Image (tube, rainbow, N blue to C red; front, side, top):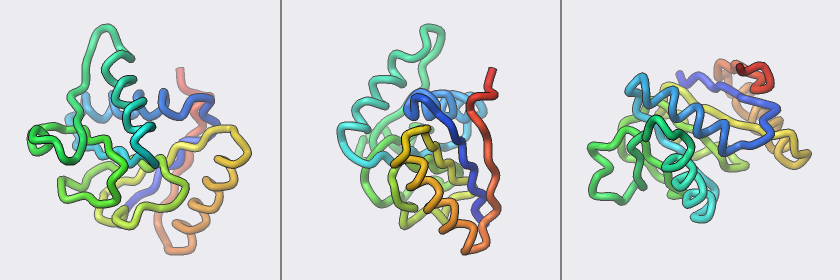
Amino acid sequence: MTVVDFYHSASDRLAVVAQLVADEAQARTPIRVLTPDAATTDRLDHLLWTARATGFFPHCRMDSALAPATPVWIDHRLDHAGPAVVLVNLCDEPPPFFSRFERLVEVVTTADADVLAGRQRFRYYRERGYELRTHDVRTWT
């Protein structure tokens, strides 16, 4: 069954996602990031190209010809046909395909609307019996 990790109290959601992607990519874990829209996909794509001066993490969109050979996929499409190891959800609702993944990551900022949506997703997963873990990003060093 999918394990759900909530990373809360983030001041910059995409920066936290970029760090999580970097960590997973170093471990060579296939990771999918589901964004809410094309603009967020573009912003995260740009961030992953520029976030670290000492490293780059190969990533692409779901429809890229390079997708089968790329460990990190970023897209707003609500389907997924690739490896199902880690899914990062940036949408307000649980993704329809999340239970295919070994691990689901939810990142919640301190904004009131995001906290409320995060609590609703937490409740949704809890009511369905998923293992939930929480992580306060303010404690990261």
